[in-house]
Length: 80
Image 1 (tube, one colour):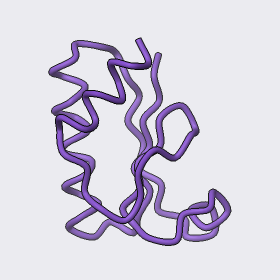
Image 2 (cartoon, helix red, strand yellow):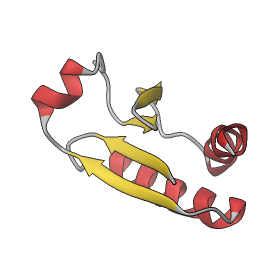
Image 3 (tube, rainbow, N blue to C red):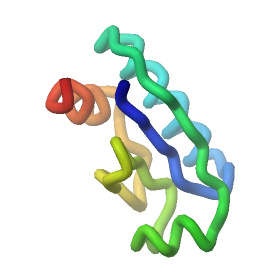
């Protein structure tokens, strides 16, 4: 199962990232664990300086912008 993490403080951009991730998982038709990471210390420890950030299976793939559903779908399809 793929683990998708949205790293951020819960701001509107972080919420939009989570929403887009949920839509992408649905479109691809896979099972994925979606997790929100709010802890600033953990976010910084992963090298993220701008939120929102998106991590797939522990690897930060995007940071500092809201990824589109299509961008997330592309990441997920490459993990199948």
